Length: 371
Image 1 (cartoon, one colour):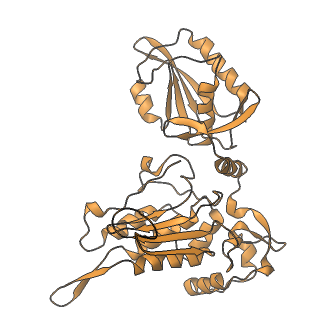
Image 2 (tube, one colour):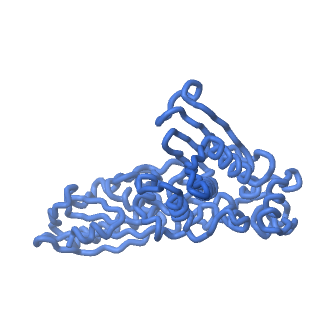
Image 3 (cartoon, one colour):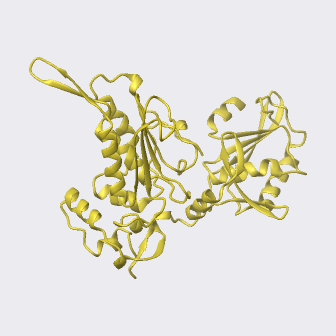
């Protein structure tokens, strides 16, 4: 029974006994689970998943509830379940992902928010706390209004690209309708990311074509390197062009035609770059999207973990649900037909790659993320 419950829990933590004198040892996991994708704490179970048992389940259950109410703020949603395994009494504390993030541990004169990194609960860095605050107030970075006035900036690239891809003109009222500016003429962060000028420092892309299979010195081992900054459409086009210029298109002659064999599927590259630009965390200071090309692969890296918590390795990309860290930017790129809003981007990267001549399972794109 315990093995089945552990298998069903996305995140798990095990405690041999309930620590009452030093409850931070397990309350930080309650904070982390609430700030992430939820999880389960098993009391009376050793780290190697052996049921040890609790001497007084009722007393421990009351203490768990009391300590959570006293020391976790706001109060998270949780369920306590008594279990029995091999005649041993256990407790399972199921913590739900919270909507009022961040959830803090408060005691000993401190307030700390925790997140899960691997199988540990660690103090959340400032930029993650800031994102949790936005999430808890139903806001996102791109919807926040700034002090930048729309009339002080130009949007030539945005308007020209919108006309080219939709056949429609970008009207002045669209800036408010699409969430790029407010009614008083102040730009949101989404609007600043779409100006012709470089107004958001983190809106950058570093591209490198390395000589060989690993990174080295940019001065000795880079065959080509570029740095781009500014408008998201400009970054998308520049990144695509960099990959295209540093790729090869081989071909095979058949009886009456030839078959082109490009290194990478153009649509897959576009999907990956759009994903990197749209879903990245712009709160992480001093960060940028990276494109690293090697003799045998291209790696595209974007700042920020999975918006909903966890890591991409834990999900099935064919059934992953759509979650948008920056919904205004995502909506605008959807209108320009650069992306869909159905969580299908990763599937598209795989399916477009599978269409390449000579494709084998060894060439299947790989996805990974960290906290």
